[in-house]
Amino acid sequence: QPQPARPRVLDSVRGLFSGHAKPVAASQTAAQAQPQEAGLFFPWGLIFFFLTCNREKVPCTNRAHWVFLSPSCHALMGNIMFEKIEEKRGPAILGPSDPNTVRVRQIASGIIRAAHDLFPRGDDDHDDKQETPERHDFKWEVVIVNDGKAKAYSLPNGKIVVYTGLLNCLKTDAEIAALIAHEAGHVVANHDMEFSRILPFFDTLAPQRNEMEADLIGLKLLAAAGFDTHVAHGVYETFGQIGGNWWSRFHPWCKKE
Image (cartoon, rainbow, N blue to C red; front, side, top):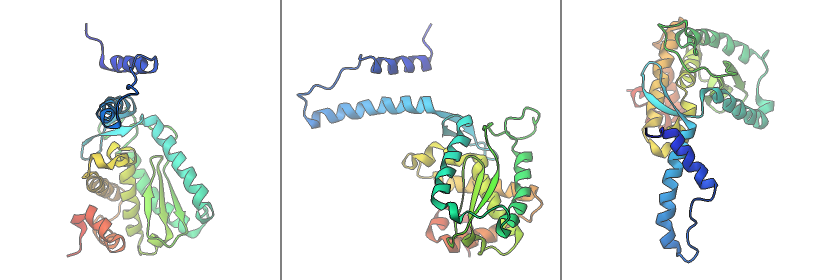
């Protein structure tokens, strides 16, 4: 019987580490060695991809995509990312009793409940729901940074970071909810761990597609939380004015007429 693909790959890796791979002859010129080096890179790249990537489906769109590492590692990666943010921006991170933090977390609580309801994580009791892979140590949390930049982003451990500069551009609770829902959409879709996000030159259309998916998931979360979804388009137009060409390039459907 033929040997399974994964053991065959692992045997090849063992062979490379046990000295079975022949070194490039020292007498070869650099020009002669380059094709062989390029040829060696490709199988190593395939081995790395095969051993570290997992295939998932994005909720709502059902698009299959490849993500790095297993779902159990994704929250850990998010924790590491946030530790770096704390080291760099620690004094600027507002505490839980700050009025901005209290307000935004109160607004976000409805979006988070909607995310739990619409996209449960690895719960077999929700057969009619679109499950997302279980991630250990995953916890939704909104963090506010006292900075004048109009900026927000999410991490794979469920943290959503919002700068006060962006909050100042949003007037109503519904507008803030639209922002939180969009960032939560990125988390639900697991865009941060996507292969094309980490190595964007493999898929140049990934940024626009990911933003569209975050918009779509965000609208579902916004509606489930009881907010008016029509406000989202106005918020995206505001982002377009703030973000300029970058936002407009990845959100062409949100350009102001």
